[in-house]
Length: 245
Image (cartoon, rainbow, N blue to C red; front, side):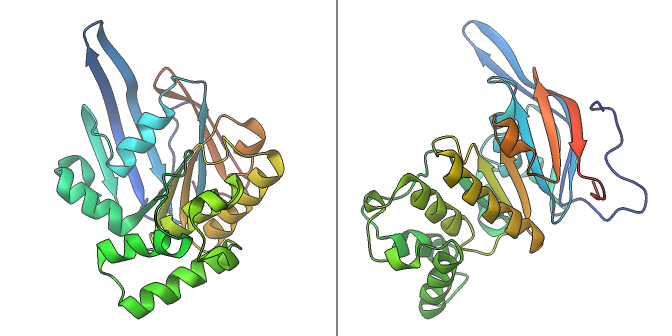
């Protein structure tokens, strides 16, 4: 299946993420590089979408544009009905804080804050919960990813797998509809990686939309739909039977 294939049926609900002919060109001294070349993509609530492809195929650029961490050169990006492509950096950041949780391969945890404080911090920024609710929710999320007993420790005292679990709990702090993960298992052993993907599957089953970048073919198969990028274009789509995308 190629990128020209229709992603949805007329009876489908509105997509949570909707990209129309998105192009991203990076300009440098050596010339221009097209990272994304006319991407059309719809992602629905509760979907576990995996983005795969070789290094340099445009995977990270795609998720950075969807999260508003980068801007497209042209094309439309709609997130929960909001035209992300029309928003300035401040409003894009506000939308990301409200609608999305982002998990990075390198964890990006704050080393001087405890495990509990790392999860509370996004809630403090968003001012969505009271101080008491922040602590209660942080402990609940740490329990969900099975590291609540480490709440008072610093991130450096945790294993790599535990730090990634912490990063997932932090990403879920403000109850986002969308969880975006860029190579979240890249630095983990296979058993720990499987446990992390189990968490993503559970979140999707609870109605979260999960968008994950990976180069691992076995992990990619765990999603409800997989798209493969090559030279900035979607060249293949594979989905689970019964998927609504």
